[in-house]
Length: 427
Ligand SMILES: [Zn+2]
Image (spheres, rainbow, N blue to C red):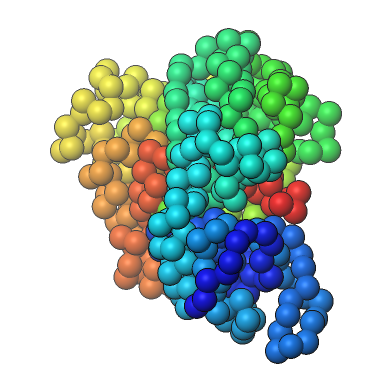
């Protein structure tokens, strides 16, 4: 480790070189200094062993006080982008923070709307402030919108929420939130159904929702006109499954499902690391389920009555069936046995069809934690040992789980969509 004099441009980033590496580092909750070699800016030549080679490394701007990592000179360490490299960054961070140039300090200064960092760094205009990329996130729910600003590590730095009203009024509040906040991209996880086919003329529209004013509304187009940045656009549940796979309960997994059981039932599907769309997008809330033998409820789905999961198991179905809101039903009420039956029916079918590595259950109804063991038991019983995986036969407590990100799953997922939009642009 030796200090580099003055500012200017450093030589190489032999440590963590990509945004993915940075996220890996962030899981250790390490503050990485602005001057650290880990921040990728542009490809440059690297000096190695006295010989210059063209390599896809990155040249980084350095700040006074930052320390040059010895890993700059050893691309073997960089290839791992592992603990040793991050350790070097951490040491550099202490020096940089002593000089007041940490990412956190600069980010906070930038968020205050003052601070030298924005003036000094023209990238601030694109939301890249002090080497921290600020990304907007919109969790567009049917009853509530949540807007936030976050970073590439999944940290939510700022958030607001407001009721979902008519499209114009709701979008105005959303746009007002982001205006002037200099985000580099925005991710939107929206209630649906929505058009997620980029080749469709109605891409970005809300489609057949009964919600007044929203049917056919060009949600994405309205956002793009006012805040022209790259956008990630998907269903709220696809966003949530993506967020959980990046930072939550399914961290590092490529195949998982996210159910939300609330005012409706939706399912996000990640398969082989990609969000599933296909014909439209998965509508796992409306899969047929076998009726519970002691349940005479007529159902609550306008399309399928009592023949689908949402019609029998969403919050409004519970309320209609039992005459009280779901959260007022005591844990030993037989309502929960019936609820667990329907959810297990759908989950067992999904396990057989998609072979997920994790099934995450979120939404208001799943705040009833006592539902989890009931659902797990029924799923095991339905599968009856046929799916030969210890995840189901022995470790089902870790297989069917609540969201690791808790109530942030939706917003963090939207953030992940925004990061994806940025990565698609090669930033
Ligand atoms: Zn239905």
